Image (cartoon, rainbow, N blue to C red):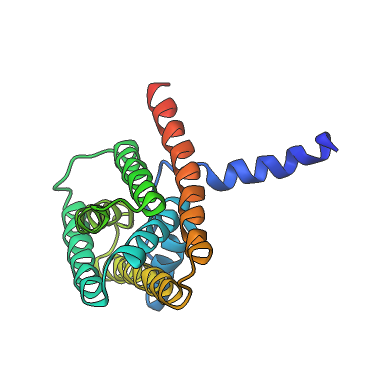
Length: 209
């Protein structure tokens, strides 16, 4: 039984192992747009980051503030992507992922514990996460038009992922108001915290090797 479980464990480890090379190649035409979208939703670091933000914002902020945070997130990711495209920030992939997982751990922790200052932390973490994800979504250098189309696809995927995550959490949080029902969100946040903390530890180990 234990021997048969090794392949499964190997697949899980492969799935959650952080990808140190976060660039993706641009494609021509609409294929580039879909390539950018698939890149975001196939990267564990980006998916967990978007889910963590959604859990925090959906539980902490009103609808008006959620809309403002969506705009802030969009501006942050566009600015960061532009800076990365022109190589204005000399930062390595390992450094970006290290900062990313550190922030995700803190976001998950706040979403699980829901301290009094969680709304202020949400307003601080959303633009920071946008700046980080802007670095993670820039495709490899190539022809200008395919590069831009692929980049727009990645940015669109990040914004929609953030929108749908906090909108779904907010809808469920308002609909199910019993304590045990809302506790489920905190359990999911704690689960994501455990995964993020593990991957953050992997980043520290890989950086020191």
